[in-house]
Length: 217
Ligand SMILES: [Zn+2]
Image (tube, rainbow, N blue to C red):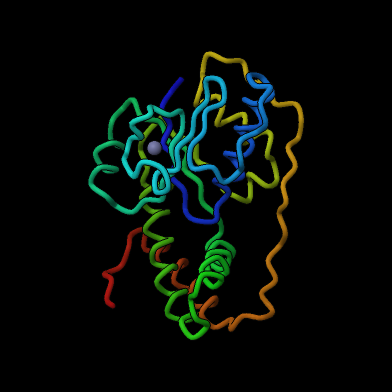
């Protein structure tokens, strides 16, 4: 099996994908209970998974896993690893507004204060554009599956089959059972919309230019 680097923008369906992969291999290879969804490391038959930051904090994982999760934190070890021709990638992203709001809700439950909302949205908008420029629009690596969260929610079996083909090209992949997702549309009523409007304008301007602007604090 290939070693795949799962590079994802936060809140873009990475855990949903891993849950689907675990279920897929579990059906074929295991009578044991399914490993917990949030496990930072697991093996199921020929499939193995590492969540970089909560497992080994090394890229690649020393356990030689099938797929490793990381967000792109621009570390030198990731830069070295990702440029190798034998490394494959699954790149996941999501619409900037819904992913940034989802990430805000995740952080807010862990202490981020409401007063930080406006500045935080601007910083995340820049980070989202950097991620998209590098991994989606300027990614020339030919062994990459590009996958948006929106497509993953709309066509989960199709997206899972694309990733399985990358992991194991020799295998004839049949994903005939639609895998349920728990997608719920975001409700923006409680938010100050001005930063969200700024986010969409910023993203539009960056992609009209085709490159990141100079970043001033
Ligand atoms: Zn690891």
